[in-house]
Length: 455
Image (cartoon, rainbow, N blue to C red; front, side, top):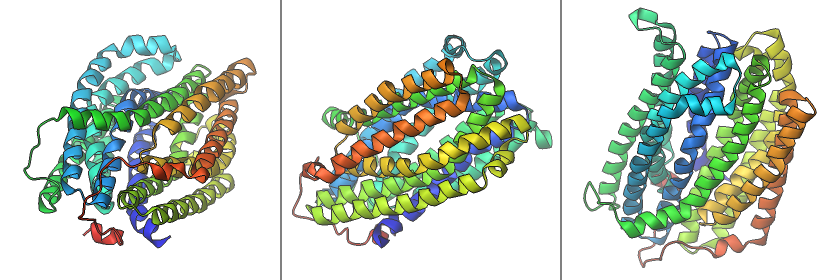
């Protein structure tokens, strides 16, 4: 388990920092009012739905890099990283165009009137920062694929600190800065995102040139490699966007009920991210190790790493779930002191605590299968569970039976449990270890110590 922890530790801290960046907008905007807080959470979810197709597709960069490193194919790692950056830059153009249609999009979603104006303002600005998000995904994929999870962690800390500073200055107008309120929160986030991408680019390019993953600083787009990356990554992107779309339907239905329900739901989601992101960090480590070991033809070590990652995530997220149960009212009060919001939010955290256990299994097993290049089966399973189980249950419980956000969270628990059990069955069968996306060379990489890859 030590090998997994060596890679997962920095990734977990990085994901915690990402969570802090995401929740800082929620925290600061909550000081403006309940409606603004609900609007930021809702519009942020809608914005991420549009971006998640490309972000998920770019997860293929880590998959290819890890397998190339394991197989000893150094130049392939650099080539796929550049193709990932090209995919991100091209996709950012239509995403920015979508921002101009913010008003009709939110009118179609029929959100509560008090949420409309701040939702539109936040959404428009966040989509303009899509290029920074996509470049960050591609560059972090390269670094994590070669076994370096520390560098993305440090850069994320820097970006997070900048985001918090800009939130404080731009939301409230402190020290002579303009008071931009919800728009200020969005501007702070996208500026921090572009700074993060720029730092990662400099570091990744230097490392790639030094270690032979690149023969020159800039590589031209290569149609065959672009298509390979998209073919492997697109199922992940489709899975992310449709899963996020199902969650957006849930959030939309809650936003139509009342601002109290919307704010309580948003705060609960922010708190759940405290444990969700570290679990995803462990999944990142599993993807890297499984990819590298399978690339090197070492199935036994790939299986061992997968099992250790699953144990680590289950232990961590179960402990977090217990914390949610014990301190549920106090956790809600950190974000919002409205007694009505606290009462609803504390109830939601009961469901969230149980959600943790199955979500740990889901995230790690998804990461294991991705590391092997098995992306289609998880996509099909996730889509069926999200739209044939989760969305109908949310509508039934939230709308038809008038159970509010609590009914939707119960539906989410059923959904995540079913998905986790199906993926576990796939994992136990073991056929995922038969996949390989790259050709092995005679120059096998030394992947025995992930700590060495980070130096």
